[in-house]
Amino acid sequence: MRTSKLLPANLDAERACLSACYASKEACGVVVNRLTAEHFAEEQHKKLYEWVHAQYSNGREVNPVRASDDLGLPVEVCESAFESEYPASMAEDMCDTLQTIFLRRQVALRAGELAKQAREGGVDILEMALGQLHAICELATGKMTDKTWKEHVGAAIDSVELALKGGVVTGLCTGLPSLDTLTGGLHAKELTVVAGGTSSGKTALGLQMAHENLLHNIPVAIYSLEMGGDELAKRLFARESGVDGITIRNGRLVGNQLDRITGACGRVAQMPLFVRDRPDMSISQIRADARRMHAAHGVKLIVVDYIQLVSPDKSHDSREREVASISRGLKQMAKELSVPVVALSQTNKQGELRESAAIGQDSDVVIGILEQEDESQRTVRVEKNRHGARKVNISVKFDGAHGIITENTNK
Image (cartoon, rainbow, N blue to C red; front, side, top):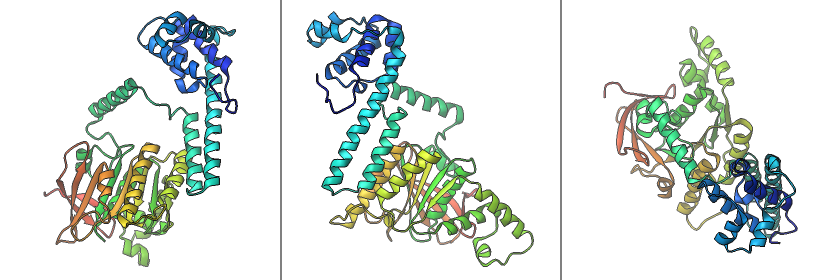
């Protein structure tokens, strides 16, 4: 026996599933569609199931003699593995059993690793615990099962068909049609960096991206390390009401502005927006909190304002390496949660990403905001684009009073 007695396993259920694959092609299809080799705890059963899966996928017969020849195992071992007291008609029930046992086994393994790290120290134990919990939840819903190549191809075909039906924008909208055309929108698992100097409008563009999706009832999370949540709310009031931000702050309202702001407040309050405005959040804390919000509220877009204010999990010998670890963590978060992450970043006087070239390397799209002599004008430049054109400029108007960026029609 090659499985630890300390870990949950049900070898009878494993033999029942293998036996069902031998007894009936229909039952084999049920098992193959429900289980992977990882659901089997016993190593020989795992090897046999991988063989069964390949046989079924290629339309070949499943029998112990052929398994013995192909795998070099004694025929009696294969015959024993394919024998069970449970009929093939119970294949679904046996698959349920193995999936439950597999989940218990994973919990035991991950709990053991967590206990080991807690004893040894040297890691953020809260981040690790939340990560393990998230992984278990993903396993429970089947989201962490590795896809086959055919499944990846199928997903790519679905994406192409979606583009053919709906045009070039297959991701979430940014609020700038030309930018959406160039990038296809904000895509799951991708990191988009919006870079600019102080007062360039990068926060306005990040909030605009969030607002554009909130209007379609898409849940958004914003990690605002510079600006308080109440200030973000006021900016949304200005966008929704058309009343400029200064007037909202000083309260000198005229005409119907009070009614407009009141209506805007009601609409903003109902938006599925989740804001964290702690100024000292580390990348591990952001990732842990994002996991919770993704699980509890189905967050589909995450905005981080801004990279250089995020605390590293540990000190490095240079600031560049610290920022690199943060940008890498943001990219990992996008992939782990399968959502777009928009991260704002400061640039230096030369317009380069401040403190780390790794920000550009980790990102899928980099959007620069360039200031013009006319303070109401900006150039939005696609500096990097993994999936399309780059070094492309979009002329925009920046309405700082209302926090709105619109494309210029007189280009």
